[in-house]
Length: 478
Image (cartoon, rainbow, N blue to C red; front, side, top):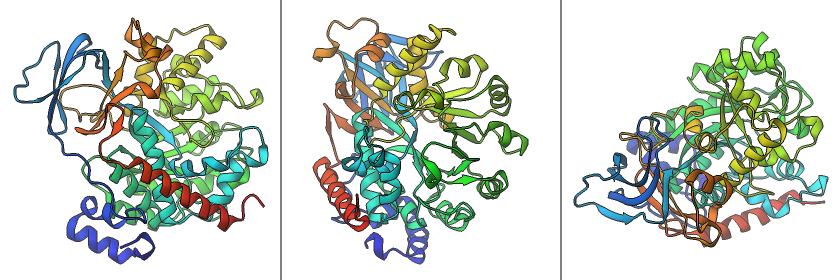
């Protein structure tokens, strides 16, 4: 069954017969065939690594051990009893939780060949808006799969897939299938479509169908919505949508009736006061791009339990009149903060670089006041991201009982030699190429810098072919 032939009836029949987890991924595999089977979960112990748990009760271990069994973290300490387990030699490696990326438009990944940073007409907004309107569910599948391959290679084990080109429920099926097939953990944020009229409500019926079909699952994937911008004057122009608060209420009430969280861009004039006055803010809301908040607005966010996702690299490229990255102000106000990539059209997925840029901006603007430690930066990229996405009971730290989302980072590479403090090493020296091993839910998805299941060459070729076909349909750049 190909994506083009998938019908609502076939999806529901499949879900009823086998459950969404077991059926949808194979039914929605890329056009060239079925997805590669994921590695089995095993009994594994990592010994001798520099273990950074991100769990205040456990602390860190200069030479520690992490025991993984049946997809969960069984034990962490200087030495653990794991007789019979496969041993991974952790000497020369930093062992830590996988990165949690809290805002990433994965559907844009295959559009990278057409984007230019120095030409406005070829920047990400006009390119993705124009080409996005021609993408099929198959295109969405291969593009998301390409992005996830880059995520895993950089040590990202959880991603918030901000899908603001959900052209149909079948597009959502495709993106969820790509996430499931690749084995990554994450939230899928069901959104509008590029070019969608502001007066057109979100497809709440399609959203409800996706919830019935896919949720609840095995805990690997969760569901939410991404809203169109509220107000006007946002970066990216009208193609991203400008909702009145009344229109936003209709979309948000529909999501809340389904028990789903909400995420929203706040680029441009801040909508926080208008959202507060309309009674729309709550702990189920995540905002993205904190650039122009006021002290009054930050107090509102703290009181309402709203979180903010920072994408340091793209935000640092924006003109000064669009605001500044407000890490210090948000932390001082007690607002929940996390880190994200945004998209990978004209920059790469690099959690190390994101932490590095964020720290540099904080030092440059505020002279590290309030103080932000290097360890706190790593926490922002791991545990705080899990808190933001409501997944802290499952991931974000190496805590026994949580699911085993673990990465190993080599400190023996040329750019890492003579490394001292592990947090200094991660922030100042590390890069995605130093990620040696990636484990998600107890499955080893990358080992010694290579995928264990995902066929990267095939993934790239399918995305390249799909991108060319979309370009031709859109007659881009004419």
